[in-house]
Length: 256
Image 1 (cartoon, one colour):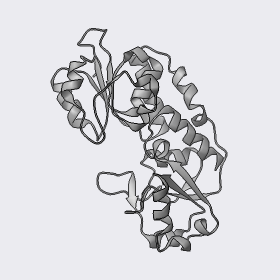
Image 2: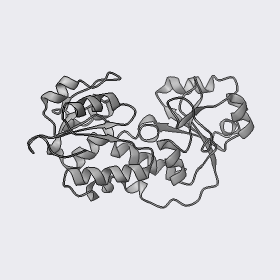
Image 3: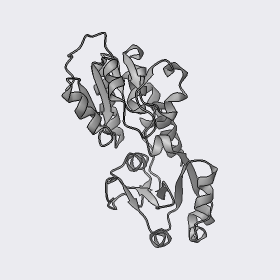
């Protein structure tokens, strides 16, 4: 529901770093509220835009209302309660879900329509994701954490990127459980049995690397023995984050 109920001078409040980046790229003057995200804090151009949330705390509804937005954009599963409350108060909302590049491209098109902007400016920032990657003969497993051993299947953003770049994700068809349907817990026995050609580890700082190497089964993996380990940032592969982080991740996946 995106009908205008407030003056056109009002802008858009975005509750995710990705939609904030897309809106700012399409129509900078429209963006009036953003989340308190570490990835956005690096962008000097956003420093004067009101922050409406911080860390894992829910967005500040009073602060959002005070901005008199024409639209508030959130992420499905994370901002449902906030968006429902705002919608009850007569503020238009858009609940988004980005679990694949197809989802992302559709979102860009929708936001360009809402802002009456040309989507080409965004797609220029995603040039590494638009290429047709040649077939690769590699079995890979992505490990997001050590306790538990979390890995993405094909229902996740990470899983869809692996598929796009023709990397055979050994956990693609395994079922996730609980709230995170796109991720599953692996057992050491499964990893040892499957022996992926390459391991992709998510970077959270040097300590995270040590956590992997300290796992008792770590040296039983051929990928470790052959040093076929690639490190990726959390933003880009697990959490889409921003246009830049997505593009850098696509570039790196294509080069594997």
